[in-house]
Image 1 (cartoon, rainbow, N blue to C red):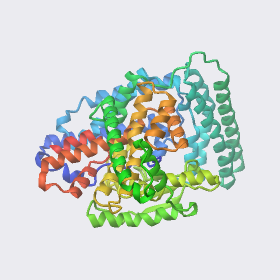
Image 2 (cartoon, one colour; image 1 turned 90 degrees about the vertical axis):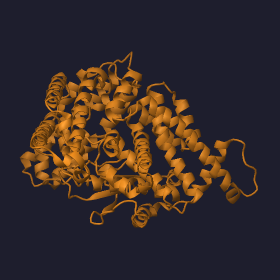
Image 3 (cartoon, rainbow, N blue to C red; image 1 turned 30 degrees about the vertical axis):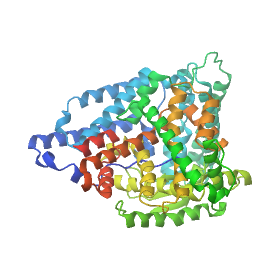
Length: 584
């Protein structure tokens, strides 16, 4: 699964229609007034949210506060607590049952965000043990790279932020108490890596700008002070004694609560973990059946190994040799997109809006670092913008690394990747989501629903005959799908059950058939993050279970296209709320 870099512009294509039936079609004047009152409240909340989070505002395309930089100190946390508790009190003034279905979901999303704020400050307290949370480079890089305003305008706003960077890092130093070692190392690596934003990117932008020399000099001086502050923070992290560092593992109590807030599932973290274990066992059984079936085709009369996982591994390795050439990686992706569109239309799985083209492009330089694929979609304040499918470059890779990568994204997996990222996965879902003006579902959209939809569509396409039901395609999808399943197992096992690195590598390499380098990267990821890795499987499972429940309810009347379109009509709502609305 590759990183997804979209800024969501969410809510439902058919929401007004699907949520306007039944009793909601005959709202009283009083209910209508309540809905209008809640809409006014949402608008006020969003305006205050951006002032409270100016860096976030910049990223989603709201640029009124581009000159502000949040100083990460106790006073800022106090203000955030006051903001959160004030708005929680405001929500209590609304009777949830009098709001329309779309607004009920918005209510839940706002409430979850605010309660998560309070919990993270009072209980999680990551500001004390996660030094990597302090980094200014990303926002400055975004402002330099995105052409949302004239360069001179962006540079003036950057200057205002630059002047506050020394105070930012001084405050950061004062917050840390016994930080986790792996997160300290990450903070050092990322902050040093971000210096190029100030040392080259900003300098190059200044050369291109039409600002007066005096303003350029002032910005350059502020940039040098920012560089000194970043280096000072890195040195602080390197030399400050840390005799009893906190573990990077969250522990069960914090993990369970973070899962509730971040994933917003109808299941607990442990239930998802147990479901993932069961799914892994099922996948191994299916993969062994297919591998045995294919064995004579690829290995002739050679004897079948007694170890079922070894049989699967040998078959995967054999099939993985079939892949595109390095120089054809992007063109192969471009060629597959129309074929996916044609298949979806032929099978009548989902309406595809041809007026919203997907632009396949080489990954921009400022995003470089991870080859593969990602989607960059327009944010809620720029819905008319292009959606890009970013394809990483293999230029400069060694022959061995390139071959390993291409085997991982072989003939079969590359098609599944395009289903996931583009048609009918992330890109298609975002086109549907972008039809509504609801900013709440855009800003606070549920990541598990987003990732879950993309995973669900992989299986849906194969179920409907994509790849001609070839056993090779199913085997390789099962292998790909094991990533999703093992992500959830790994995350819970590491943060709650204290899984060792050795056992993690066994899970990923021996049981999920991943390359050693890929597995090592996943261990690093689970060491510096928590809960997010469960979003893929949780969302997939809940969407699949919902589809089966609707099938059972509707019987012979069930229509897959109708289900898919109705599901997407609710925007990026948590699946548990979509389930309630679809089964009512």
